Length: 220
Ligand code: G3P
Image (cartoon, rainbow, N blue to C red; front, top):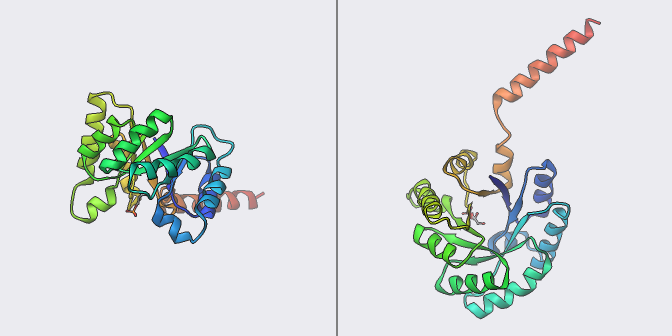
């Protein structure tokens, strides 16, 4: 399963990349706006971080709501680097744009997915990834795991190649739930990525090992 960082913060992305297990980055207009920096500059800096890695995906979202506008925005983004994955909302215009982008050979990420029917349409349009927003579904009392299982089943039954990129992640446990259901990738905020490492028993166990080793060595 691929692990992505959901962030527009270049320093966070650098720290996550340095660990060596990150396969890509997702951004969205809100994450970019939060940083208060120029979109293209941020994207170029993210691309530089991953320059030694092949098969990386860096999602950059269009903000037009009409097909021609989406395609016009996608063109310079796609030219930046082969890793750039054009993020398009699942609307009627978005689905048409995804189909056109498929014909142009762009990598795409069908975003703001909240239902299996939307995921089916994204796959039919040839999206590289579909991003179900799990946390936002749970926030309104719905069952995001059920959605994930439905999408996985539909994609498996019809051998659809679109990869499931689970998004809007709220906890490290949710990352494991996504893995168990067979999500192809999960994108998470940096703070959740940090939590993947943590367990109190690891800290206590390491402390004891090091203390015992110190005692053993000081005995000469
Ligand atoms: O990038 C898309 C998604 O992960 C956003 O998550 O936390 O704003 O619901 P969130």
